[in-house]
Length: 106
Image (spheres, rainbow, N blue to C red):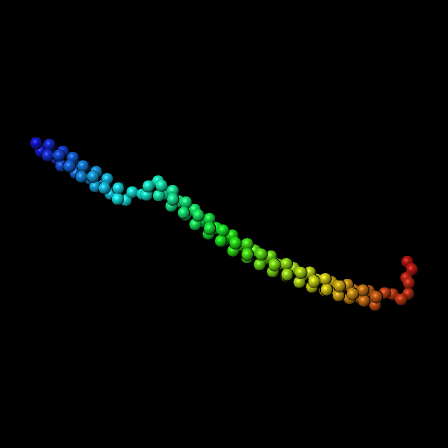
């Protein structure tokens, strides 16, 4: 009879554990499929809006950077043009001063 009592205790423990697990599963179960789809839709809309905001920020910063680069490029071009013309004039003056006054025959 001892074997019968041990099996009964095991069976009662198994049933009680199964019921406790089922109750815990029902209480902690995820949302229904409809609720989950609604949550996913809401999160995707939220992420889309955040992505759009970030895209606007990036575009704005890119435009600012492009404007700054254009301005700096124009300034550099003007500076090189001015200094280049000055250098050409200096070379012309130097060459004019060093020209031989008498023609050379070779």
